[in-house]
Length: 131
Image (tube, rainbow, N blue to C red; front, side):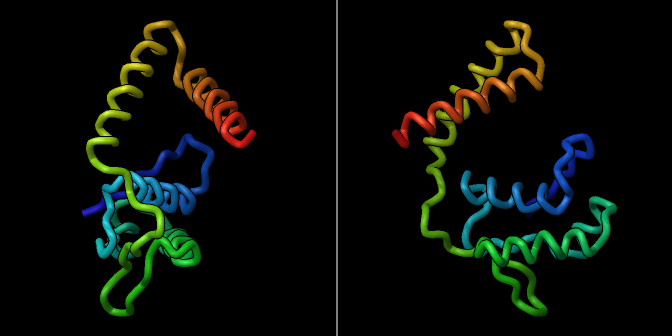
């Protein structure tokens, strides 16, 4: 079963953290079409957060067509137009990224610097691909 986590130091609202985690899990293939998300009650108990926060996240995911709520049954992941990444691609890219992260930390970068560098290079690369 899928388990949510919250980072109280991220500055990202809790409901958005939940939405982002589901988005990422679907894109990476950890959540498959038809998989059931934890019930709102279960998330509230696990994370000790307000039920309205979890309900807001689930509504957001429904609006984005990531999931569909079925009364009395739960909330289920939808089939998406863009296919999830294959496990071999995920493994290969994950290994490459892990190697890069180890090199960055060995060079003395902290987490904030790593995130800044990644974001900067990511934006440059996207801009090059668009041009």
